[in-house]
Image (tube, rainbow, N blue to C red; front, side):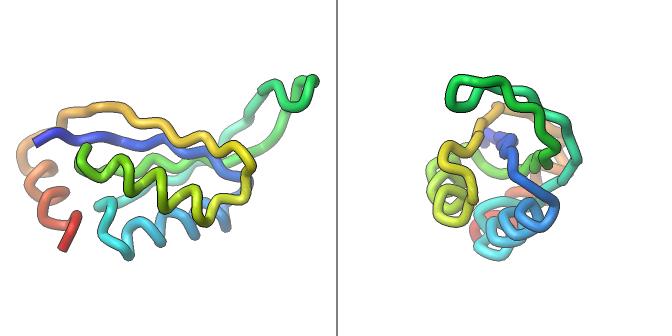
Length: 103
């Protein structure tokens, strides 16, 4: 089975928790982590420097489209960052993840 982590940036911790909890509750992802970050990016012709939060959620690759769809529904940004990275994990963790997603 193929697994992914999804990297999602958000405006603040409250939004990060809202998105992670939404995805976990729907059993689209097994779990998520939340970290504060500093970001620099181009937006509407100028460089912006902001405080943001990043969420890293763990799921099966087959849930990638569902993750994007659900995040876009509730994300506050016009152009949210939703990226996937293919991963491998230890066997016990993969069994746990498999058991928690899609129940």
